[in-house]
Length: 114
Image 1 (cartoon, rainbow, N blue to C red):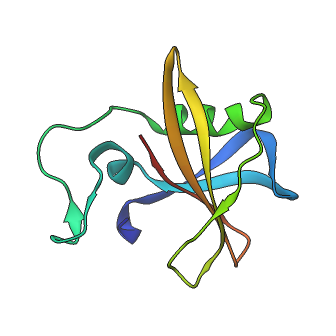
Image 2 (cartoon, rainbow, N blue to C red):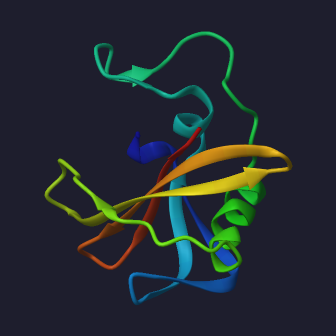
């Protein structure tokens, strides 16, 4: 993720994860669309893996209120991450993974959707 591409979006409805009430999320749409290349330390080249919009990401996140799942916290390498979760969400009939970081500064970051 690149700081200059991170956006803040307000949610239409409150979402609760691990006891935390969430009204806004941060994400890098280009990271979600193109994926991150660790070797280049930049986004992957080539065609996008999806064409989701900011509104799509907000809608996917808000699905967490209606989906019955109990995610387990994952390991995160960044010291600023309090907890990382992987959720399964749906784009029509297509099942996707959404990685969400609950940060120590109380912000919520959608890391990627694939």
